Length: 178
Image (cartoon, rainbow, N blue to C red; front, side, top):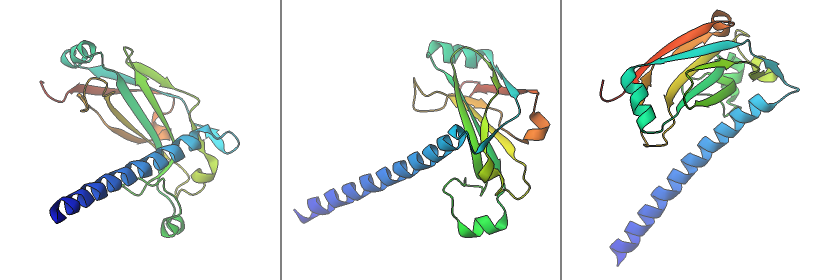
């Protein structure tokens, strides 16, 4: 009987810890979304385009599985030292960068997307060490047909000044099967 109670307590603890982690992630995502919705405290990011070039096998797999592709864009920068020491924000990433805006787009069949009218927070921009920011782009499958990502795509992290008003090509293939 004691063993069963201990086992139930252990399971309850594990479930509670998992929920806390999920709640923290939701808070971070909410903060990122709020940054991009602010109108008084935001500036428009220069326009840029992303062109995805996926292999034939990847395109076929996505089509057969009725799967989408997600392009996740974050606008990030290195916070000044004073801000790092206060640890005031929950919008630092694992590299210590400060997220000042983000945009996520889901593509069904199209493979070119123009990012325009994206916004970054003026107040967070002022907290950056160099007063400039980078664009970080991750591409992955929409996980409609599988819990796993199906595609391996190029990763991009570049200063906004180097990609503004340009078309950037990212290549991708299947994670398994190519």
